[in-house]
Picture 1 (cartoon, helix red, strand yellow):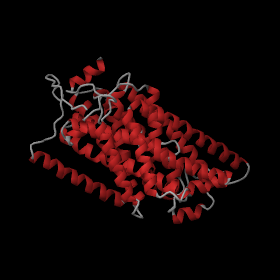
Picture 2 (spheres, helix red, strand yellow):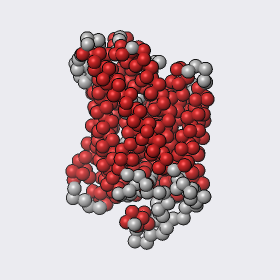
Picture 3 (cartoon, rainbow, N blue to C red):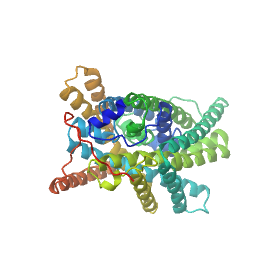
Picture 4 (cartoon, rainbow, N blue to C red):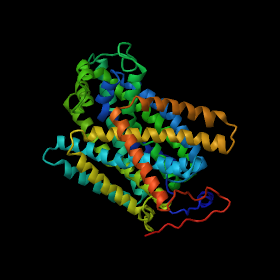
Length: 468
């Protein structure tokens, strides 16, 4: 009842079903992040970091711990779906919230399409008789059906998939460790620090690539209206997921770096075919381990990871639509399933169309990855500013550590990473932001100035959301 009253304070009804527990949130976050995610982009991170792949992931964990802390502060203040869109809109101003939501749309809307594309390309290379477009269609159809049934079905399916991913990862860690102990590969700490190649700008550039593996812990905040136990559970789950996944990322990239068959060639030529990790797995255990890791990665990206990405995207569309900042039909909630059904279906359609188009481009995966990472990091920067403005300036908080120092450190680290990110990503990301400003101007001109209910909670008005 208290949770419903908190929503009512901001002008909303409790429409989504509160069925998720702490363990569901942790499983959701781990599946979204994919414990074996580095396997798909290991070569790019290795080459971009001068061989210091484990360091890139370690820096990524440190940077995003501060971001997770800022999320925890804001979800306690505003326990509702919408993530940075709501936190910036209510913590700073509604127009800033719209732009933050627009920027993070670059992340959330594109992520499912990227995941489906990577998985479909990988499965096509494994089973050439099945074309990429058919794999795409199959992945999208399965996930859309599961997500339309209800959040409990999504949670159950993703838990099963998570167990499978962890088993594959455990097999790799054991076999790789045994291989190194047996004299294959070369034991070293170069993956953490190599004096011949180390520069902070180099590592920051690699972190901007590696951050793709971390995207997903923030998606937990999208489930604030479907969680038992209140906002505290969200913050705890985000921190737990980030640390657990970070340890797994560092461990597997360190082992893989020591087993790379031709490190000099990987550093000079990069990993255009995306097979560097599987080449290392083959050194460790042979062809069977390389195939196991490749197929597991494809399935993980194509089913559980894209499934939870679709959930997060649909909740963002739902949150913005019920505030009349996106078309109203996206705010429709299924009475039987308690899910934003139209937003879920639209996410599936857009992901399919995007995946099919990008599959025709030689740079499709690289382009999507760069845009997603840039959008996420810019949104995280706005999140840190929201903590300071809302708590320290508006609420006159005396907790300088939580509401100034922590978000300040997080902001500085991420700003440095953004500055050293891929130039093409910077240009395209800024172009997307400029388009968002044009849309915002259009909203003002058409009398739909961004406004969030409950910003003056003394006179709350329940916002009507159509249900189907």
